[in-house]
Length: 125
Image 1 (tube, one colour):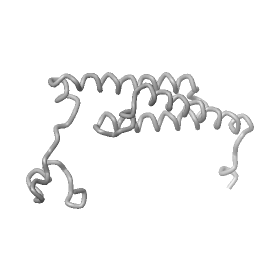
Image 2 (cartoon, helix red, strand yellow):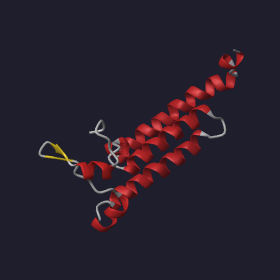
Image 3 (cartoon, rainbow, N blue to C red):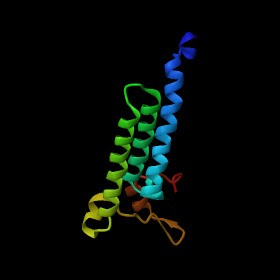
Image 4 (cartoon, rainbow, N blue to C red):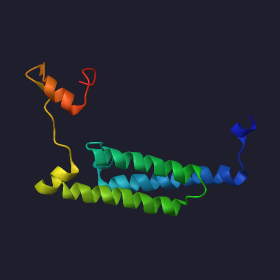
């Protein structure tokens, strides 16, 4: 059971400080990039959300990733998301970046072919 409580004084100080600093950087990034940062409106939004969560964990819990490296990674992730958001304004590029919507229910009826094509189950609907 020692592994549960094994911590050094340096880790006890570094972990919360790293957590607070990277959290502040994430809040700043969201304020600059807008609410879409974690909106999960598309696949790349979801990927950005997962990547930022992983980055926060890495910076907070490992000493091999510094806060500055985490901030640089955060800027890269959010910056990439911003570029993709701008690309989406171009109709041609939009088809390469986003999935097209699929109509799975019309007039209260489930469209069997379309719901199967979407990969959704009846419970998902």
